[in-house]
Amino acid sequence: MSIDLQIAGRQFASVNPATGGTLGEFECATEPEVHEAVARAREAQSFWNDIGVRNRTAILRKFQRDLHQKKSEIAELITQESGKPCVEALLTEVLVALDAARFCIENAFCFLRDEQVPHGNVAMKTKAGRILREPCGVIGIISPWNYPFSIPATESLAALVTGNAVVLKPSELTPMVALALASLLHKAGVPEAAFQVVVGDGSTGAALVNSAIDKLVFTGSVPTGKIIAQAAAARLLPVVLELGGKDPMLVLSGANVDVASSGGVWGAFVNAGQACLSVERCYVHRSLYQAFLEACVAKTERLRVGNGMDSETEVGPLIRERQLRNLELQVEDALSRGARVLTGGHRLPQRGPNFYAPTILADVTPEMLIMRQETFGPVLPVMPFDSEDEAIQLANDSEYGLAASVWTRDRARGEAVARRIQAGTVMINDAVSCFGISEAPHGGFKASGQGRTHGRYGLDEMVRIKYLDSDRLPGRKKVWWYGYGETFAKQMEGFLDLQFATGLRRRLMGGLRSAGALMGKRKI
Ligand code: NAD
Image (cartoon, rainbow, N blue to C red; front, side):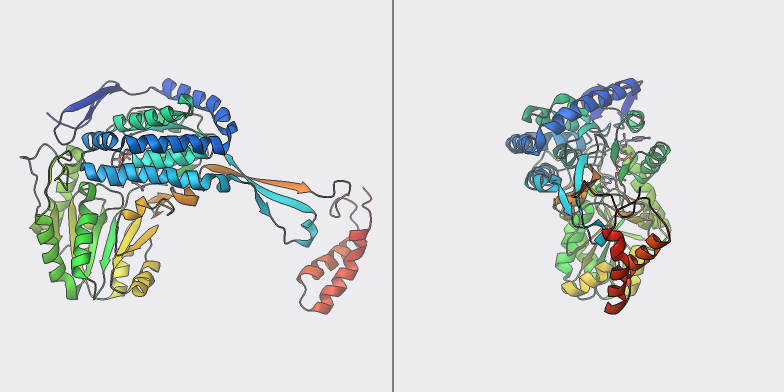
């Protein structure tokens, strides 16, 4: 049986990628259904906003407690639907969502408080300015299958705590995890209409983009991101785009090979390489190249590949056949151009339908597909470099710019290299784990997207900034209102001199020239 998504008309099935077994059957939400969901969300949003941030954080706290209680149950569901080892589901999905809730609970009140804006311009000193942060309204969220819980959860929690309603369209490959998230949020007290899930494929996603949502947060591939950006531009819909990556790993001369090889193997094979932040290309200083490759091969061959429900499993299956075919094309291309497979490089049909052996490729070159296109599978392609400038140039030679990692014993040197890398995040001596730092903004440069999720910048995306200006002298006409003329023009020249002329004397003279205007009454 093919375990690709089964769509018959509007029906589709959620399939366990490790076994090929069907977990549940669903129907794609139609365009009118999506529009109705958005209309219901809009009605619910004002109530949800009006209950205030303290009540909303109390609901998030309950969500956090319930999720913590059900952590193993949720992790198992994630493993069944997405294939990753259960411990990864616990750490990279449940823990990330628990911590995102913690961040929202701790920070939402201060974030949403009115912010005073002191005025530097002398003419505006009589005004009290404040920045208000208002919810956008209804946020549409479209999410992928590779982190089916933590991605929609972190984005939804940020949207909800700031007073928005959410309509979530999860990946058609992982609808059950999204429905479990909805159930937890509803049980905690989020009104059902304020958080809704519409299941379905790309056409359901397209219906959401074209509905009356106020903002869209999309996480997925670059090709889909481009389609969405075009549709959004046509109606000036604001969008956050969290797209693919081709993250480089730079192992500098003198790096600890044992640490770097363990980090590289984990960074490349975590979630079977299906992480947007996966190590996808590895550049190693020539002095360490051989030792690094040998260490990576030895460590890769010790990895246990299997069904994620088995607690011994370290690498699970890929999500579907299409993913394997894409990976095989890239490996074949690399081999045909001179790369060498040091370990792996083949399927593992005896484990199940979608298993691929974790693979180390040596002697890759920059023009190979495996160094240019997102692989999204358990392959670590490695090539040597001679100088730091060359390594940085290789790292930046990519259409993507999501994240990167630099491996060195010298943190200052690592940070200096990091500053020259074109990526939204650069980690020194670790990879991927930045996604678990709730305070850290997540998002990419170049084709990896625009906007940010997570942290303060993630909250910023969920609000509209309103500037409130309140004049402290309501009975006084403003100097700049009508009543122009030559005298007034001279007075205003003086006023500009008062503030910007060089030299104290010229400023004082300007002040004297402008005093008349400040004291006098407007004629109109
Ligand atoms: P995808 O682009 O195929 O699908 C993502 C979502 O978009 C799914 O829910 C899908 O149904 C929906 N969709 C598809 N066509 C659509 C359309 N025309 N209009 C609206 N919605 C549509 O991506 P995927 O295969 O689910 O996920 C893997 C990709 O996501 C990888 O490229 C990965 O790097 C990226 N990703 C990025 C991040 C990040 O934070 N930057 C995180 C995880 C995954």
